[in-house]
Structure formats: structure tokens, C-alpha cells
Amino acid sequence: MEIKFVLDFDGVLFNSAFEAFSVANHAIKGRNGFRQDVTYEEFLAFRSVVTDAWQYNRLYSVAKAIPPAELHEKEPDEDDWAFSRDFFEARRTIMDDPDWPKVMPPYDFFFLLKPLFQSCPERFAILSTRNLSSIRGALAFHDADTVQVFGQEDIRSLGSKLNVAKSQHWLDPGKYLVVYVDDMNSHLEPFHGQIHLPLHASWGYDHETPSSLTENQVYFIISSLLSIANGTRK
Image (cartoon, rainbow, N blue to C red; front, side, top):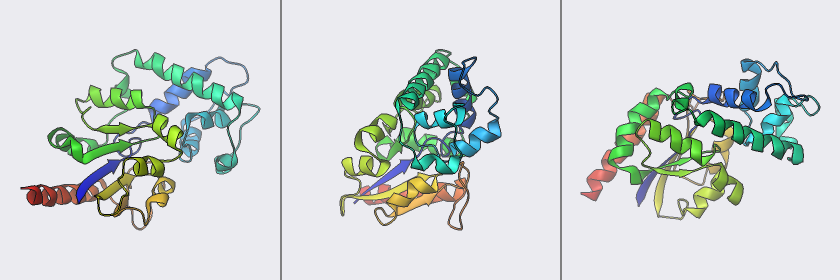
């Protein structure tokens, strides 16, 4: 049985909240019909339940703003998709600056794992609701663009993070021992009972639970399993 470590990106490897805030503000700057006074605290509260960029329209739109708790009830309309397109265009503009990843600092957890990304990249995959190009750009900036990446494009195509995992056969009985690390409890929930170790990262954006683990605890689990796997391989 192969071991696969699947990692979320935002809130697990990188602290991307301020970057997303900067992109959203750039997308609506000076435009009628959009709030120009969204605070960082408001953004963080909303971001904790966001799974796709179009949903930020329900924070910034004057006419369509809703509380974060209602976001899961809404289906996107054309205005939401238009906001999503503007959001990614703003991100592309910001990414033209080669130093843009500096607004998205890595967590210590990333630096713990970076040597493993380089020594055994086949053991790892990133599964994120963020778009692929920005993930690849941030990893390349830190000389770590070595692992499989599945992003927002894959999730939209297949419907969910769980479906992406199924498409890669990570959930096939007896094929993989999967460790999945995510900071969002709602993203972990579908994996419970489907994989061996769904681990909640306590250092991200969601609330902690009694089973939440610290960076060092998760790294200990990963490094220990990797040592066992490498020993078995020998």
C-alpha cells in the first residue's frame, strides 16, 4: 500500500488571507455598486466559508451582500461569475510583479515539509480551491514546485475535493494510505470514513476542535509514516 500525503494550500502551507484580500480590493477599486469599506476582519469572517472566488461578490456587492452563514445556500448567478472573472484578472495583474508571493507568507509547516517535497515529491499532492497558476507561482517562488497540484479548475470540473481524490484513485481499497491535511473542517468532513487519516490543521482559518493538531504534531505524523514507508521500500 502506497502512502499519499494530500495537503490543502491556503491555511495549511501558506497564509494567503491578505493576498486574497488585496486581490479582491484591487478587483472592485473605485467601481460603483461595490463596497469600498470592507475591513480585513470582515473579509476573514467571510473567507472562512468561501469555497470559490465568485462568493466574494456576496461580500463586496452593495445589492447582493449577505451574511457569511447564508453563503452555502446561494447558487452563483451571472453577476457572481463576472466578479470571479474580475477577481482572477486582478490576481493575474498582481502576479505580474515577480515579488507578489511576498504578500502570502509560508507557514512554518511549509518549511518543515519543503525538504520532503524535494526528496520524495511523488508522496505528496496539493488539493486546493485556489487556482492552479497562483499555487504553482507561489511554490516556484520558494523553489518547491515539485509536487502534484490539483486546484480550483479541477474541483469545478469534478464537483468537489472528494471527487478529485476519487479520480486519482486515492480512495481505491487497498491502494493508498491517505493522509489529508486541511484547515477547514467542512472540507475535511467528506473525507471522514473515506481515508485513513483526515487531519485538521489548527493554525489555519477555521475554528479549532478537540482533534485539531499543531504544525509540529502533523509534521511528526508525516515524517514518521514516511520513514516507515521508505524503510519498507528498502
